[in-house]
Structure formats: C-alpha cells, structure tokens
Amino acid sequence: MTPEIDTELFEFVNKIASDAASLTLDWFQQKDLKVDLKSDRTEVTDADKAVEEYLRNIIGTHFPNDTVVGEEEEVSSGSSKRKWVIDPIDGTASFVRGVPLYSSLLALFDEHGPAIGTIYLPAIKEYVAAGRGLGVHSSRVDPRVSSINDLEKSCISSSSFDMPWWPDKALLNILSSGAKTRTWGDGYGYFLVATGQIEAMIDPSLYVYDIAPMLTILPECGGKITTWKGESYLLDREGWIATNGHVHERLLALLQ
Image (tube, rainbow, N blue to C red):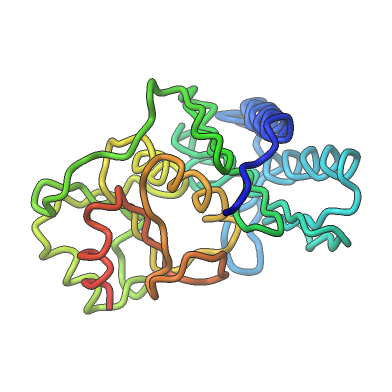
C-alpha cells in the first residue's frame, strides 16, 4: 500500500506554494510589466522568472538533494528520490492581459509517485491543494468532483478546441458528444474539475509542469486523470484528460 505523505511536508509545500502565488500579484495588471517571447513563441514575464527563482531557492535550501523541474529554468538534478515540478504562472497569456484566471502550480513526487499538488489562483483568491492520503485543502467547502454520469448533462473544458492542436477525429467526437464545451483553460480548468464545477478537462498536449499537480489533486478529490492513452504516470508532451471519474472511460474512448 502506498504510504500517505508526511503532514509537515504537506504543510510546508502548501505554504510556499501560497506565498509564491501571492508574489505574482506584485506584477499583475501592472502597465510596466515586461513581456518577452521564448523560442517556442510563448510569452514569459519577469513575474514568471522571479516566482520560479523564489521557489527554487526555498526548495534548494531545505532539500538540496532533490531534483527540481521548472518551466523557466533548466532541470536541477539531485541525488534523492524526490522531484519538484514548478509552473510559476500557468496561463501567462491571461496574466499579461490582466485576466485573473491564471494559476501558480507546484507538485512534489517521491519514490511512490505523485505526493503533493497545489493549484493557486491568487487573483480570484481560490486554491486547491492535496497530499497523498491526506485529502484536500481548498478555498471551497468540501471540494469533491461532481457526481454527474450523463455526458449530455456534462460540461467539458479545454485550454483550446482549435485545430491543429486537436486531432480532427477526437475533436469531432467531443463536440458531437452532447456535452457542453467551454474553454476555461490551463490550471483553472483542472481546478474546476477537482472542485465539482465541471465534469472534464481535456488537453491534447501538455508539458510536465502544466499537469504535474493534478496527478495528486484529482484522485484525492475523487476524480480520475490519465493520458489519452490511459496511462496515469507523469509524461511530457502528452494529451491529458481529467474527469469526475464517472464519464472518464466514455470520454477516453472518444479521443482514440
């Protein structure tokens, strides 16, 4: 049986995740925000870089032998069996445009797999954080996935339903499934699934730092998360589906 995570470690991770997310507000909706383009043409700001550096410094001080993976810097390899995954601002496109639905993501993995995951949405004062075997802490009362098991009564979100990001067949199947579709994207969409406001979040391709916290959060909230291939371990540049569990297999079949 996979052991539950240490309570003190969970509290530590949740605290630094909260503090890091709060830091983003120093730059949010500021007219002098500096925005650059990375090699993949995605946006990056001084806030992205500063928040990731803040987390790396704290983690490095307390756990110098751990591996750290982040969106803005190179992997820092360690000798322990723990790995931290940081996305300082998930939804930078929203952040730079003053849209408050961006999030700050932090995850911890150990020798047993996903251990801790946090999604903080500081601009709207929402969050969900989970530790393996410890359940969920959230701004919402009793955060649980929804109980809906009828696709026609379900709401499915994605960061985008645009082609060519989506394969033609999978997109057509989802759009004709009878479910409502919305584009509440990035970490916000996964927060909505975890807290029972929508039934599924589907993205065709994500980096590890975009999805890492959800591998702890969704199961602790009673949901399910896999790649489009049905795998549940952390993989890079894969399609991911997070659901309330009740509609998972039917939606997964539509993606094939």
